[in-house]
Amino acid sequence: MRAWILAVTLLAAQHASAAQCDKTAAQEVQRGLSEFAKSHMEGDHLTVHWTYAIEKQPEAKRLQMVTTYADMDACLGGAAREIMFYRKGKLMGIASPKTGLRLTN
Image 1 (cartoon, rainbow, N blue to C red):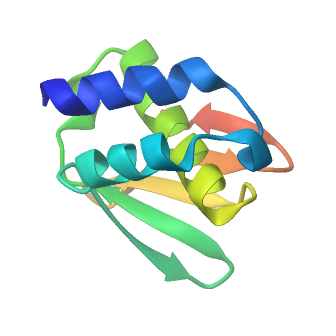
Image 2: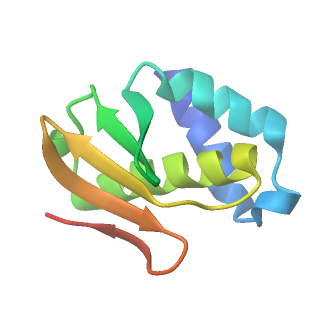
C-alpha cells in the first residue's frame, strides 16, 4: 500500500501530457493499482471495477484515485480515453477526454 501511495504521488505530481509522461512511473502505478481495480474494454470505453472499498474514502481521495488511474492509462496508451469507474456495480466516476473527470455520487 505504501508503494502504491508513493507511486500515486509521483504520477500525480507530473501533470504532464500523455506524450511527456514518465512511462516507468506509470507502469509502477499500474502494478500497484492492479490490487485495487480490474479493467476491461466494454464497447468504445474502458470499464474499471474497483475491488478496493473506494466508497469509504473521502471525496477528495476518490477523485485522486480516479484521476491517477486516468492519468496512468493516458500515459501508457498515448492518449486519454473514455473510462467508466464502478464500485459494486454502481457507476461512481467518469473520465472523458471531451468532458474531463468527475465523480457521479
